[in-house]
Image 1 (cartoon, one colour):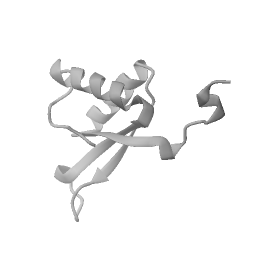
Image 2 (cartoon, helix red, strand yellow):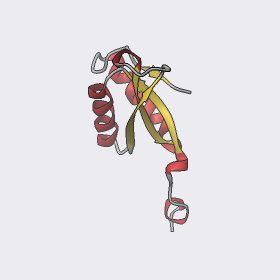
Image 3 (tube, helix red, strand yellow):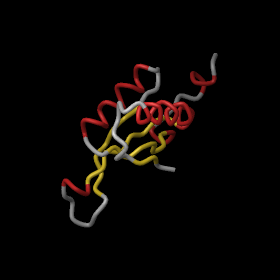
Image 4 (cartoon, helix red, strand yellow):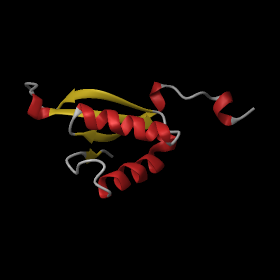
Length: 91
């Protein structure tokens, strides 16, 4: 039995990866990572006391075990101008 079968991953194993600048960019990242076998999720978050379109970020989460590879893939997409440089990596 593999380690993943013995200890299935849960929502507690998710880590924040990236704050995308738009819903479109967030969806693109989730699809791109999925094509590479990395399960990713997007959720909207406000970064101000009063939510507005200018202050919204779309947070991308992945399982902690996939974070390193996900960072490499997102950075490569930014470098290749597939994604904008308006997003932010989260630690």
